[in-house]
Image 1: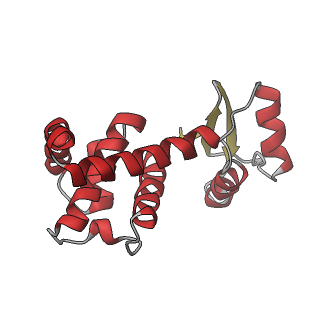
Image 2 (image 1 turned 180 degrees about the horizontal axis):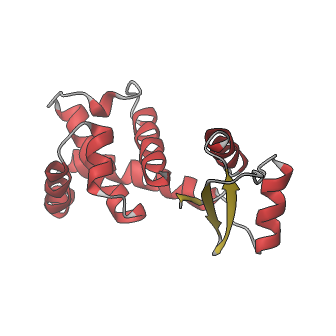
Length: 169
């Protein structure tokens, strides 16, 4: 779940940096001004976040084999194509800057307290679990199916300025 959110954020960052309309990377266009950023965000997501090819394909409305192609041709494109190289550097540096600006928790207590202060609560009749990890520490929030979506959104909102992973177990 977090992988898809991270990739969507990367796509939004890229379109914003390049002055493109939000969501334009998923268009079926083969124009260079769309195709190059599409390849770049795919490569960055694979390199930095190990985002699964199926997730990238789903968000970009492409087959996962297109992502394989972007990865295979990255080195050649970077070394010989100035447009690709400049686009890659611009998006990559901005993405790394955003990632490095996010905080992590120093211990489990601080993570749990932060979630509690942001109204993330356990349900009395829990049916599933949301596992939140940040800074090497993780905690489980036991929730009911009825309250699941609300608690998940509260977790995302509470942790938006932090590096975190969310897993449904």
